Length: 117
Ligand code: 5GP
Image (cartoon, rainbow, N blue to C red):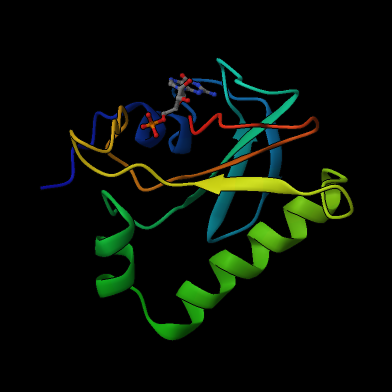
């Protein structure tokens, strides 16, 4: 069950500040507090879902495709399109997921080697 007290839910309710990169009615992108590369941004849908599978199963087509279109827009805004970047989504304990609100890490700005987050 979705935990309303997870950190990203608090960020969405503006109870905790974040360094915002992009926001609209359905999505929020903000800088990771503990970046693993020069550019490290987190993208979250505002819908209450814990992981990618829940997002896939619980979203309509438009919401789902809008999220990935916004990832593409933010990748452009961050200037990552030419030299490349990495997208990561961790899920569950074995996936190393810390925050149980579905999110995508956008990582880049330098050669990443084998950094997988
Ligand atoms: P996960 O391990 O769940 O895939 O990633 C969670 C990410 O959230 C981590 O990279 C961590 O640095 C980031 N994070 C945790 N708490 C906060 C916070 O309060 N603000 C921001 N901006 N990022 C956070």
